[in-house]
Image (cartoon, rainbow, N blue to C red; front, side, top):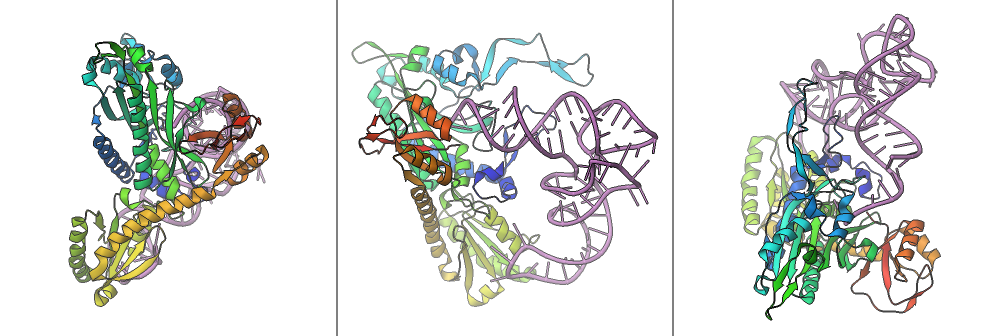
Amino acid sequence: MSKNLTKREVDYSKWYNELVVKADLAENSAVRGCMVIKPYGYAIWEKMQAELDRMFKETGHENAYFPLFVPKSLFEAEEKNAEGFAKECAVVTHYRLQNDPDKPGKLRVDPTAKLEEELVVRPTSEAIIWNTFKGWIQSYRDLPLLINQWANVVRWEMRTRLFLRTAEFLWQEGHTAHATKKEAITEAELILDVYGEFAEKFMAMPVIKGLKTESERFAGAVETYCIEGLMQDGKALQAGTSHFLGQNFAEAFDVKYTSKEGKQEYVWATSWGVSTRLIGGLIMTHSDDLGLVLPPRLAPIQVVIVPIYKGDEQLAEISSKVDVFIKEFRKLGISVKFDDRDTFRPGAKFAEYELKGVPVRIAIGKRDMENNTVEIARRDTLEKQSVSQDDVVSVVSKLLVEIQDNLFNKAISFRETHTTEVDTFEEFKEAIKTKGGFVSAHWDGTTETEDKIKELTKATIRCIPLKNKIESGTCVFTGKNSSQRVLFAKAY
RNA sequence: CGGGGUGUAGCGUAGCCCGGUUAUCGCGCCACGUUUGGGACGUGGAGGCCGCAGGUUCGAAUCCUGCCACCCCGACCA
């Protein structure tokens, strides 16, 4: 499984295990595909959460929390949405266990404790939230309603893949209600920009903003916007989506408001989300054979200091110097860890922090103490330099910015060299098969053509880029007229 | 749900075809000592219902039957 995370055939299980272990309850297939996220992996998620949460709040959104369980009758209210998720819902049917009369010491479901109405474990929360919004919205003065929820959801996928498609995952889901169509579309696009900025500025993962085709659209949406990243193995990753829901949910849940003119109107809606899949994207965008490579802005530990010493006396001397650095780093908001464990040798520590993707490592030993220097190593290029102790803090803080930029630039140039414009289906097949990455081609706009191409090449339309230039051409498959290119790729 | 594969210590494995003492090796773990500028070394030690249940046999990790789990490839999907 972990081997699928990048193209290289190396054993990633070791560093992968630093982040996550799969839930593995003996003899129990029920939790297949769920994750146990270990503290270090979770810390990355917390960093992501913090930044996204800040960005949502800066754009006027508020957090709230809604139930995990959705009564089936609510779930099925918006038909397309219900139909789209029906195949992957976990359902609660009973509320009590009892001792099993046939098997002492074992429990069974109490057959008398059957629920009147089944409860769906949320695969997404539109239904329960819109049922609640009905009570919150009466007047145009109640709008816009801009709500976000941090939560877990469950989607019972047939096949799971760690971080990218787990049965249970953590995410944020935004749900908004607006007075006008225009305002709702603006909101969906605003969030897409937030996601794009987060991906590029924080994750250093370049993304293409675009629109989904009809077949890839969210169930119940009028339009689905997305950001698409490109992983090192040439496969695309849908990293976030923002949906313009029209009035579908307002109609399904009868959410109306009284306008300034005194008329009853249905509200307009959006929903949007990103999940722990982003951790998978982060891993697959930057990691190398030595382990994770984390962009400084999301690294739980930005700088690690490893002392090299013989005996307590040397350690004490080094520690008092390091204490000064730590104070200065903290003053600048740089997270720093001093690893003075005497149970591991320096080499083992170096390897460990490379595995964990810590952007900058400082080593300081007796020799450095004599020369008033430290050794600074950067994770992205693995370069080392000797720096005067007087300059450590300024050098490192510049280096963190440089690493962040370098990771982004590297990923951008990877994407550039793995994006191919083609005009014939032969070129198309060749590009998908041998090179991977994005293939930019004209498409006649029909689902039939999209399906055929998928069948023949396994590539799907990732998006119709928003910043597309209009150029007339002919569909790479059918030869029909087309006004713009779309991006195809094999995807996760 | 279809097609293929694999289950042996915390992890990775040898042994299985061709049944035969006390199940192999490496990593990791524990103790002591020596070490410490790129994953240290030595000595000693702990850890196994060989996936589960039946069967064949004097004898099963090995052969047979059934079941279970996991992985890969499809269908589905953020």
